[in-house]
Length: 68
Length: 150
Image 1 (spheres, chains in turn red, blue):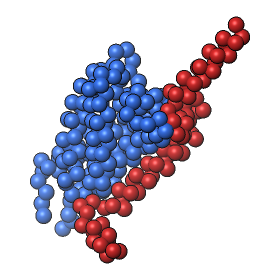
Image 2: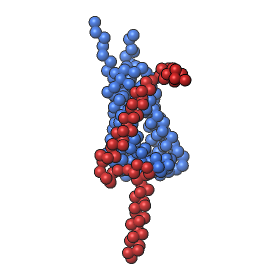
Image 3: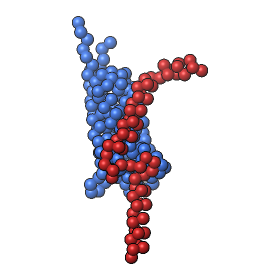
């Protein structure tokens, strides 16, 4: 089994380790970028930014309605 | 073995052009991931849980692959990543066009004024596939191959 996987990796027309390295580097840099940017530019790790905004707007509208 | 001059010239042009284009297009997405996440959500193709992570990782993939295409000798691996990205763009744009979604591409930044029609973006993606596929089938090597001494 071990040799079979090695054989497949050697037969690939590209370097699998380089490919994995480039992808891993992108993932790490992407995650670090979310810490770098200003708070209003950040995205929630799981979920769209737009949905969060919509919920926040709905909460705000509800509060306004109660106040009136 | 001598490499044909037109092929080498096309290699250099394709690598500089694609690398520069992808670095440029990644820039605004890296500067403002929130804005790009909104653009991704507009496509209504990804589940809500994945939009945030996708919006963070995709621009970095563009930047890393674009830079790798220019400054490293692993052009084939970088081109393979760009091929996967372009195919995903093609699927995303095509489904938005077929469903009649009124969104802007979000490829090079938020559109000021009227967004370009989606079919034009699809044609652009198909056009970009030509040099990317060329680089995937070409052997690895530095951007400017050094002449042999002696």
